[in-house]
Length: 127
Image (cartoon, rainbow, N blue to C red; front, top):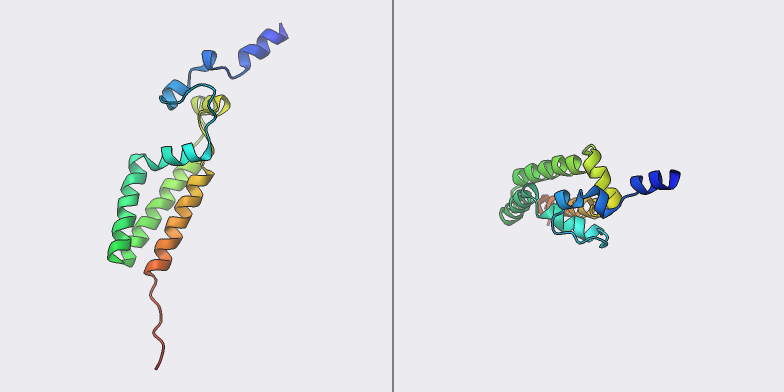
């Protein structure tokens, strides 16, 4: 009886089927890596809008646009990192179709740091 109970609680693709809802293109047995999660999170509408805003901020070199982009990225990363794991998300993590968002957070931090450094004003040297 305990073996049956353990088998029922084990994350199996046939039992949970949450990965079909969370990641429709995921193939069973393929582990979700950080790269997969990075691509998945970068392809979301908020990330695409923030990438366009970041590109505009870098193109025009405007510090207020950079500030807006950095605040937007901060809010989006906070939402991704702190989102409460509901039952479906926990099952999807157990199934292996949702990876860790750490690489996404690192890339966003690099984008924000690069924008800040690129648009920061340098003091002019005296002659």
